[in-house]
Image 1 (cartoon, rainbow, N blue to C red):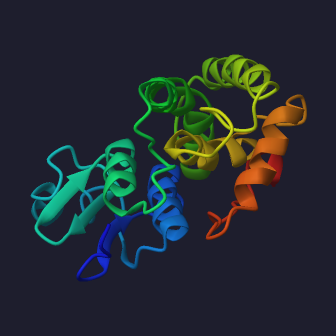
Image 2: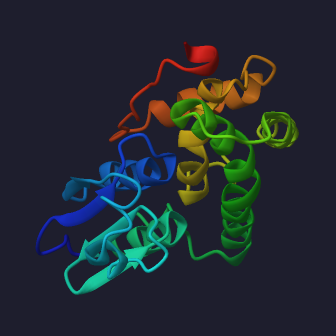
Image 3: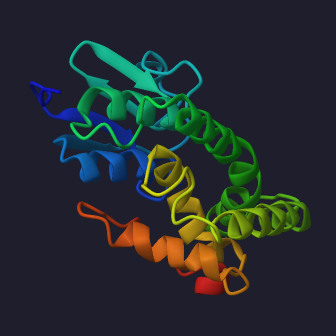
Length: 211
């Protein structure tokens, strides 16, 4: 697939795992991009200008030529299909695609409602049901750890966009007070992701168990 004619514009918040998964995919694929740092709320994602890009007022958003696209998982699908020259990050095999979609759905629900929510509460002093978020995280990680005992990546023997979708909030779960110590297979998977060519980290925050 051809490289973009100009750098992709990525509207992001540097502490957002949703934004980082897009940045990670761009970096792994070697696609040039221009980060545009945004703030949440009336002075940032709720301005008329930004709402014209995403009526839901959520990050991330990319602009690639004439295309404007929101939603981190949707962006991962687009980037893989358009710019992955290897065809490995979103393979055409229907079985693998099915497994990828399953884990994208988990990222959009259990990962978001558990580890991501717990982390946001610590980062921004949000009022949430921490016990509920921690319970969702612990159940998710128990299932994920067992899944990764049998294969190195979420959808099989090679990394896919499913792994990219799960990395940021999983690796940073301790910032939400969720320990990764009970989950050796997840910790080994995190190390494999961080060893990939093009890997770029998300900034660490000294909150929760990471304080």
